[in-house]
Image (tube, rainbow, N blue to C red; front, side, top):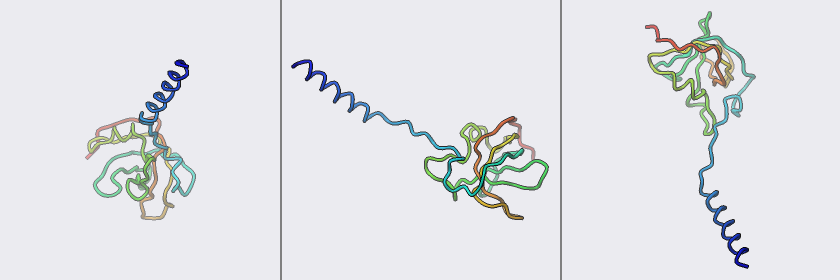
Length: 131
């Protein structure tokens, strides 16, 4: 009888502790964002911060095309629009050159910045920003 009561109390106590422990909130990747309008695509470019909105922009190498990393309009709790590792490396003095996998929030239009999020980056090189 004592063993049953002790076991029951132990199970109740363990259940209480696990209910109180914080669950690990994992953010979903850009590719899973519900507001995407098309397939993700690769871009070779230069990622930097700027004044204005969006502050983080990706300039396609070899073109004048600039893509904006949406940080307001398409910001949803639980989703990352830029990988944390990239965001940590960006400051006003650095730029990141690499191959980026981006996912579009808006359609490309002439003379308009297309809004997107960044799923991942490869072949990354961090350099001091040129003035």
